[in-house]
Length: 103
Length: 294
Image (cartoon, rainbow over all chains, first blue to last red; front, side, top):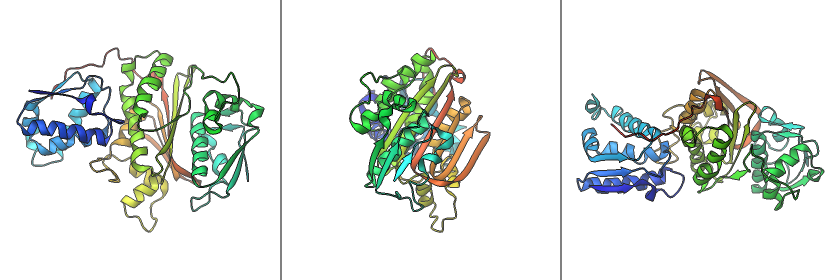
């Protein structure tokens, strides 16, 4: 299991560039079939452009069950949790090949 | 050319600032403009960022901008002096005892480090003034970052300003964010390939506020920035979101059920987002930590 401290990959205003950096770090770990702990300590909020370039892409790359079983999210807030869930679930809902997994 | 500032410069009468200074093709009307401050007795956050935006826009377009009668220290000038307006534009404050008031922040220019300003300055100040915990502002924090991203992504000039004021008696937060750029209508019309100019500027702004609409200026964007902001301010906090860009003016209020939209007779160079939030509608959240579950 590998731990990724999200704050270490945020360089600007939690924007698309930060999201893209985080996406590549997580994807590299998942490609090794490792489980990943995402540590959100010191991250207060997320934004839509961050999520669209990180979690939305992960939801495009991987099955819902795979993400559920391989991603552990720690030290997050209620809003961060809600935003991640909404981003991931809406991505699957908009993709007919994945939407069955949500049922 | 002289521009006499009105007695009161607010979101209600921005036309008095811009009429005569911008031509219909979006360029300045004169290469020398003198701004006369003698009558200015009141200026609200939208007025502050609009004035700041205008000066930066004129300078960017090669206009020499001079200030007149600011040393007369009208009430409006004293306020501008306290928020470091003159320090920014003239290099030093007008008064030796100019100082930030507890109910406002200084005029701030948006850059790569604005997230830290939001976190360490603005939200701490808002928490002190409102009596609400820092954790209570997560949603607002995220929504304002979305506006900063819009400036980063859509403003060619990448010059933006933000100013916030808290009105203790009304328990209201006023915050205004403005940039100098091509403006929202231009970006939306370009994305819609509206070469015939069918869309009004206000309609283009409304389009930018629709969930899922994106100009694709940044790969991967999914058009959630403005909808998130409107949901947060107008929906959750019973506040008002005003968006002004080009000739367009769009206002969202009362849980997004009411929308007012019009095209103006004058042009706003760039974009302005102005928020009014009733802080009594913001719930106090002691702790926002929560274990994640799918």
